Length: 319
Image 1 (cartoon, rainbow, N blue to C red):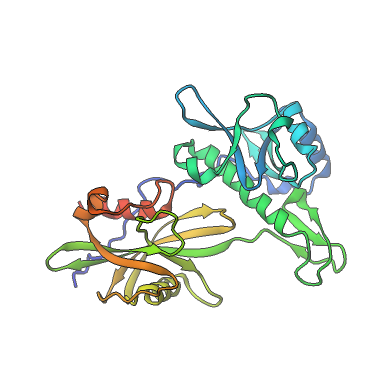
Image 2 (cartoon, rainbow, N blue to C red):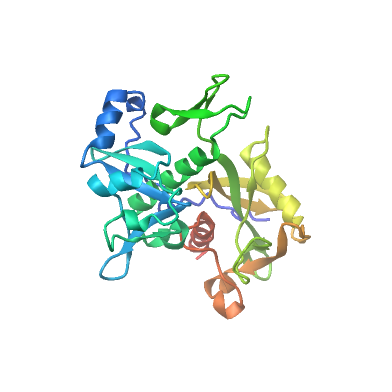
């Protein structure tokens, strides 16, 4: 097999939800005087989260924009009584996340025509990178806060610390910090003697889109290196053995609490044997098929996903 079957392919551009404009200013989280002043300042920005959705509106051209609240609007949302947390500084302005999920409908709390709560994943590819990153940060942290009210050690109630970036048990004193689960995501490729460069894509049992094929992915297990996780997941899901593994890029994925670690991986076997609990189908796709997926009866992953970036960067390198 040619040595250049797998290239060290650089990321062509930042992944969605990365490139945050925030200075997380972690040194200010324990400064109660600063936090108290910031949270009540009229210029402070708040990113509201309602049942895992973010507040957005459309501009005159129909493009989505993040809506960050200030002043009275921010106070009204905070009155819903949900958790909040300091995210950092954006050009010197404090930014907080606030969860208003306790309200059955938070829009009446806000000025008219301010926007609506939308699934971030549906529009992230259309948002400016900085806005998508801040909204993802807020969503992920608020998810952790709402799901971590009790101590995993003794079951006691937890109270926020570090301006909402940590929780502490009121009974045993254990401190808990936000959790991010590492997951590997990989485009497996090989060189076919007749068809040329090919890549392995699967149709997951969890895909809502009945014709979408995407890269393989899975969580890293305890005591496992990232390269080992790539090889294990590919073998378990498709029966294909993987040799060399090359890192590409990473993507925050707070849906609800992951980071995707992207790789290109070299197949050293061809035969596919799928795990029916994970995949409905898996196939080798040629460059010609990938260039016109609709004509070939399938769809590629969404533009905001690292899966799409792994495919497109490989296609560009093979051109």
